[in-house]
Length: 185
Image 1 (spheres, rainbow, N blue to C red):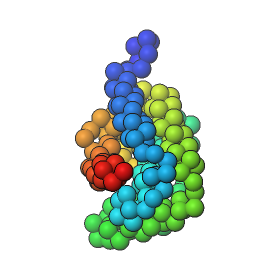
Image 2: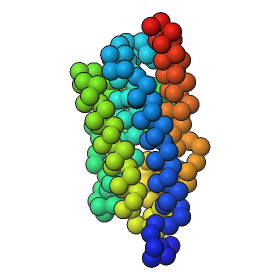
Image 3: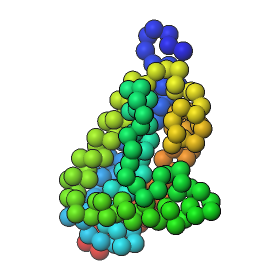
């Protein structure tokens, strides 16, 4: 799959998607003054900082999978109350997802906004670096990364659900909060 002149088109497409998503994310971060970021009620009782930490936490299993694939090692274990895969079990999924959300909140409650932003920045760097370094034959192979539920890296990252957690579940609420916050002065 490598033509000797650089990444495969699919790998490049994944890298391009990551760059687009990070640009969207960085633009949103730039819109939120640090003083607003720690105020409660940006999304329910959560502050914007809490939402950033939440999204970073849910993305970490994929980051661990990618780094492990590049290093040829097992993924780093997370100390979650349930695995991401267990949380999506239809039998008890909602309760498990809530347990993970509560656990992530507790883990990040006392961290500063700067610490949370540093972690998300590192996570974007790890994502881009791991994708750039992952062997070309693993980019399109299904079942390589556990947290992609049998999909390939290219299939998952280029599909509509890749960043759906942010775009579908959180971005509309964050944008509404920002607009209301601006209107309030």
